[in-house]
Length: 338
Image (cartoon, rainbow, N blue to C red; front, top):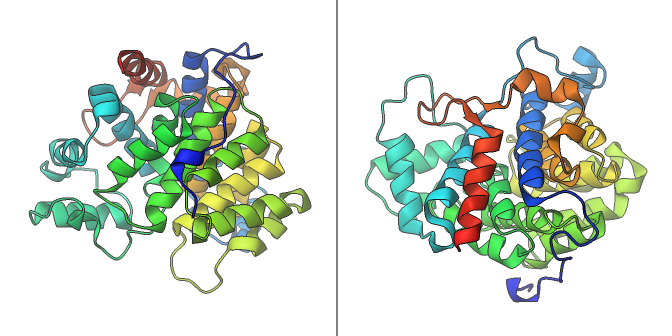
């Protein structure tokens, strides 16, 4: 079994690296939103269905690209960290779910994916964490999709990122659902220092049990990523399963796309969404790591950035219009206080 105490060392932030923490934080959040928006139209489609409609997805396929719950819940996590930082507790997370989502009239917001819906139903019934996470989809990628801000916050400290994201996840996830979030958060924390791809993958693996489904899937995709997208899918996709949001599958597909593209941002998100299944989450996860490693968001191709207008669109009233700059600043500001 792996322990978060034995996470491999990562380079100190700034060692041989010209990008600063704020630039990387903005790159992670922007990359997440771009990957989410790129993958949204193809969500739950198989690769063959994507090919039939668009060939390969190489650019936005809608006139007004926008994100989904992946972006909305990443805002949620970022604002949680801005409010509580390293002192975050399950009680804080539970209170925020009530304040920002569960106790409000839903309006256009429908609570997102299956794990979020199950959590909201439990919270509205008066159940508290960890009982609130006991629903049919506690193994989903719903925590992984919102994990990037924890890695941004705990830059260079993968174990710290894994600890905090597990606290967030205790309200909504169990088991493999938690491991998926920890892998993403730890990978982002390592990438925040400019660590190379192998170190990012090693950090993700080090914080989860080595015999877990998530760890086995990650090791398989890393081993075959050089052979291309089809090999990555064959290594981890569960044929015939009715849901596309299995955390071990989705997280591995995202890291597989990132590894196959050798960390390149455009290559990572195109592979993540053209490969099918939970494409918005896969694109968001791959985009957060690859966007971060690009450093300054200005280094990302302009045609990806411009349609989003530096705003994290959300159907939750308090979140709508939050800027990438603003959220990155709030998260990093709390880091300096901790």
